[in-house]
Length: 84
Image (tube, rainbow, N blue to C red; front, side, top):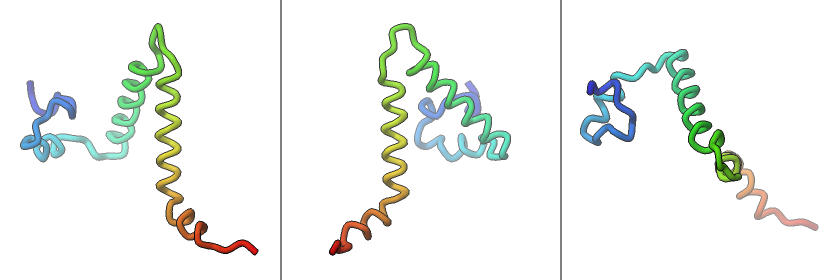
């Protein structure tokens, strides 16, 4: 099919710049992409017949890693302080 209709996982590495050129980077396009990603994640991991806690725990683990990355500089400096 056409390059713009393919998913990211179906695009070859050499076709990546051309595929990125077909993407919509307007605020409305980015919001639509986030909504599509969330709905596919929800359908695959959370809204399943015999689901377990894997989808929610994966989301929480991602949040923990992201917040640690945001606060890493503060944590690193806090570690070397002396307590008297």
